[in-house]
Image (cartoon, rainbow, N blue to C red; front, side, top):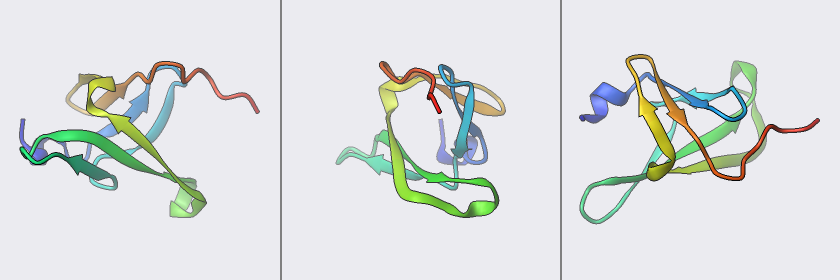
Length: 83
């Protein structure tokens, strides 16, 4: 799969049922062989304002499905957030 085919897809956490971002607004962690090892997703609120300057690192093996419009991720141990 090419990077251009991934660009623009929404990243959704299956456990939290939460939209984390859009690929293209994220960074990629790439190893020496040129393979993507993780997605680095900035933690932003609506309208692009930063929220505590943190980011979410999603290892490639936690991606469960890449569909036509979205990427579904499942991070073990990351249950629903409590407020």
